[in-house]
Image 1 (spheres, chains in turn purple, yellow):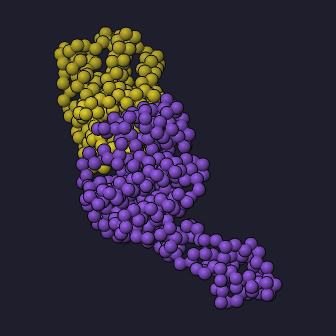
Image 2 (cartoon, helix red, strand yellow):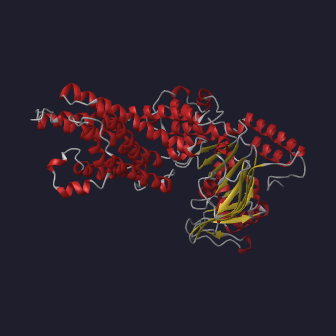
Length: 353
Length: 254
């Protein structure tokens, strides 16, 4: 699947068809979002035929050093207009440093960065008219109501969205008269999003939008981020949750220790990992060892035996044959594709962070 | 939209936020008035041999306290809190010019200080017989302007040494409370040892207090211009402004 750079695909809509098809397969995924993704992908492909693609974000060989410590070590990044890109990595991988450089809050050590056509370090204030930022752990002004906070923020922009409509969009219309300190955690996050959207930005940064959330709050946040996709915004989000990246993003860039270790769609990433199937069971200590040809390994911590293989039918056949012949039980026998979590761990293995 | 429109709109919000902040309102508006009532009750308000009321000494001190609270202490705490809660960072992520936001904060402090000047002057006049002469009114206005401007800059400069939201009230009060005592705000400087006055005179609070004392002088036979006091206050303000330009941060410490 040639959709890695995001810039060109050999056949029209090739990459997009694939992404959309994958999403349609997923149970519970809203059809409206699929269709709008398809429409926007089509428009984008048509535009691409007309003229050169301008990227929303273009980063080349970005470096960031703090003394001897290298936080970002040569990152390349390209984000198209209308795309949702997830920046995936564990804590300390360099995600927040990179996004803060893109937002213009941090000066880089070296490399070129262009966000909506400007270098964030020297961009004029008008550049910020087109950018919305949902900040990690930012609080609204506690003395204002939710509505006042959105109106105040709207006043900072030349052509903002209608504040009332923005409150409705994030589902805060009925709480608009509440002081922000009285809002629940989930409502505060909605307000964060409303504040980021009220300037009607083209590009939205979301830095770890669901870190510390309970599962239902996460689902709710995901719904709102999907809504951004429907609005046609370009979104760059950072996360350390693989499932979040898979759920929300068109493409995923995995970073570890300040370097890009993999990029592509969720399926591209899964394909980069050698084993496609994992067979596992929990052997008794007294059991005979399975034949070494099967390549079974026992995890000393959990006591679970596993075989990673591309040829699961044959291996499973050999394993069950051996078991019936020797009379060994295979308790908790399980055949599964490695989860994306496994993929992620394998990709970032050895980077240390 | 012109910068002036933005400034006035933000000023409106800043004043709204101040009115709704119980701690800020109490320490800036209520506490100075409580002190004024307490001082005149405890120490009395006799008429001196020269015909002036004793409260003539208290009113300028209380006014100094109110101006410092409105333009220095309250903004220092508010801005530190906003910085640490990511409010300032969010402001910087928008196209509003940073100076508009900072100037609005300073102006809101000035508006509150001016309001308190009127209130304290009226209370002093009506209840305690403290006369403010027309001749010295210009002194009062200029002292208020210079004091507010300089104290706003000092308050913002203080945020650069305050590490966290929790530390903000502690640090500002640890600096300001002793200053009030050695600057003749609570205790008239006529009764303090010379070295205390000498130390107090290094800092702007004492000079604002002295400038205000001159503008309440009941025996002034014309406008006096306390240039020396204004100069010291202004110098402090300029140094503070330089610190702000160099070190003011919009992003949280954590």
